[in-house]
Structures are given as C-alpha cells and as structure tokens.
Amino acid sequence: MNRICLVGRLGADPIIKKAGDTTIAELRLATNRRSKVGAEWQTVADWHAVTVFGKTAEFLAERAHKGATVEVTGQLTYRTYTAKDGQERTVAEIKADDAQVVAPARQAAPTSDEHD
Image (cartoon, rainbow, N blue to C red):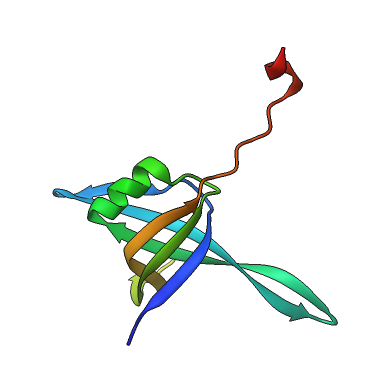
C-alpha cells in the first residue's frame, strides 16, 4: 500500500497550471523532524514536492499561501528526468488526492504607523 500523509508549511504560494480543463497546483511543503547532529538534537526541515489536481487544486489556489499549514494525503511517486547539465536525476513527489489548509499563514503584526 502506497499512502502518505504530511502536515507542514508552504514555502511559497502554490504554482497554478492548467492542463486542458484540469487545474494543477504544485506545492513546496516543509516538514520538521528532530535529528542528532554531533551531541546535540536539532530541528531539520525536509522539503517535499506535492502536486494536487482538480477542485482541490482550485481550492488551494484561493486559500493556501506561503506560510500556511497544509495537510496533504496521497501517493509517493518517483520521476526521472534529464537535467540541463545532461545528468539523469530522480525526484520523489507526492501526488495528493486530498489537501486542506489546517491553519492560514500568520499575519504580520501591525506597525505603530498603522495604529495612528
């Protein structure tokens, strides 16, 4: 069974594309994990490429912005491509069949000028 569920923060606004009548949203999702580096434990960010299709992609285009906490569920896939330097590369991607905004991006605190 190939099933993955991630909760993380968007590193950028979704990139929205169209393929015919289908909307596609490409996300960069950061998740945190604890890792021991030498004698100390540190928080390490892992970045994930996520692709969402259809109505869910349309929803994310409207509601998901950089910094938002998003939950995605889908399948882990691998894709091979030839880079500009001629080297063949393999990337892991999540093809999400469900995604939702868990918490919106944090709003910047108002400056003192905005209170005048």
